[in-house]
Image (cartoon, rainbow, N blue to C red; front, top):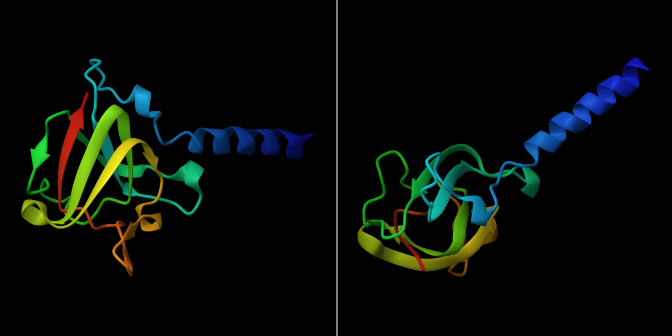
Length: 132
């Protein structure tokens, strides 16, 4: 009986961990303001455990040629809100390789190719976000 209770408790805990990435249509601040995109510092090899650690929110119209201090080359997963687009660059001042992410969840940026040999994990240095 004790093993059954522990198993149920473990499954309930794992279910809570799996719900880390928010639904793109639910991206809002506590006061209800729509968030264009949320960028996370962590990912995980299990998709259902991505979107962990600290995050950076961006709002429609945010144009950041210099990413906020402490975030350069640290983003590993992201969620773009419904009817929004996030354009990112690999270098400051919107230089380097460019990529556009549409509404949805990108669990692991290491799965997104950047050129022939690279990927977007820890490669974002500037961005622009826009919602319709």
